[in-house]
Figure 1 (tube, one colour):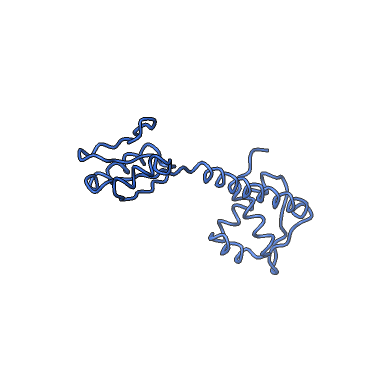
Figure 2 (cartoon, rainbow, N blue to C red):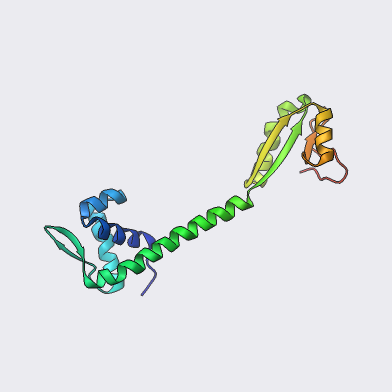
Amino acid sequence: MKGIDIKLLRAFITLAENKSYSHAAKTLFLTQPALSKQIQTLEKLTGGNLFLRGRHGATLTDFGTLLFAKANALLQSHIDFLDYAKELTAQRQEKIALGFGISSFHKVPIWINRFHQQFPQCDVVINQLPSSVQMKMLLDGSLPLFNNNSQGDAGSGHPGRKPY
């Protein structure tokens, strides 16, 4: 059996829970024919009929009932996987604080744009502060980067820190 698309499992579960093609199709934002095609595709892939169709809607066959719990578990695993990936991405999110003086105010958007092109996962926090405050923050480690020259060159005001 080849791999099963997650949307087929979602269609199967939604139809089983709604017991109605029209309600399931609305829930999935599909047309009824599109939902029917997905169910037929899943039936071909699994090798058996999943639903009894009639005037009273769609009810699971014995085969469908046996597969329902596993399909639910697979769908939940898929959701858990995506949630875990989002958590990892959020943990990798980095943040940089940037201080600048009024003389470089017009250059800051250009620097941020260049920086975001190279490091899209990094949030940039900017503060327009007096140079004396920036220097104190730089020395205590709360400001890793600042600009304190009228030439507009971004750089580190601390010998141990690298310009970006």
